[in-house]
Image (cartoon, rainbow, N blue to C red; front, side, top):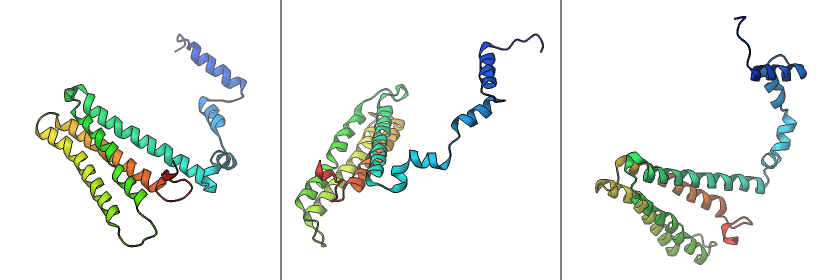
Length: 185
């Protein structure tokens, strides 16, 4: 192997390592990313002290990530060429928009101090359930009618699950009547 020259990149990396007094690239990487516990506490001080603003920031980022993943599954079910690029499943977007509306209206109208069941709130939950079930049924009907393929139906149903879990998560995180409630918006 005496005839093989090292590449300029390898030569450059070796020069950087010897200037820093290190023996290998692994040692260099270890020294460059070594953090101690105080550094971690400084980076994540909101999360360790459980300040509400820190947790709400994490919740908001997680919910937006969930919404993006759900919409990605919906778009994959519509646009992938092996599923013939049929855009019929986009009609479930109407259900995503309509699903929180009955519950939001009922929350505005209902007094939360009453411990008994309220007919308005029960009706809102019933209507929301109907909208969610319809959002899951529509892609199945499209697949049975052969407007879309079953693989696209599975992707849309996965997207539905993620999106509705994200909507539920939004109401669980921001649904209480405190300073960070969605009703303040």
